[in-house]
Image (cartoon, rainbow, N blue to C red; front, side, top):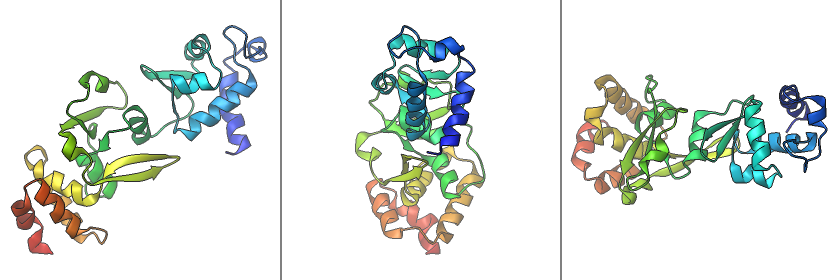
Length: 231
């Protein structure tokens, strides 16, 4: 990481400390020294701007020091056990991947990634295990809309995309089109039609995967009707 970038973020952080606080030893109650702050910035950036409590602890920060950093506005609590660096803007996909590592970017959010829609969904749509605890998805930011799937369907067609230093789970374009057809009634007609048309024109599509997924989801006839005639 560039030293000047770290210095800029550190300077934003350190203005929230008094000079005395900044020079306290790491073992001192409530204080975090400059070296610890530098390490914390680097770790936040390595993890897309989001760290767990355990990861902050591993840097030598106690619960009391973490609380102080929150009070001073240096870091913000996203949900229980997760924090973000206040002056570092993390992308929503990375935050979701850090908070819910088993979730998969789904349906309209996946369409947006592949350029199959011009409509920005009001919430990030993610596929999650239907048996997972529902209350964990009650977060203020980012705004998410979980879709609860059977575990046997959750891993079908999962791909990983690189965003900054993080890998984010997303359904591949062929699985996404199967989901579009499966959730046809939930989508606006324009969104549905655009997705089908743009998929057909996409040179990166894999029709073999498409029909394999269609067989699994028992929508082969629908896929043939909407897409097969154009191939």
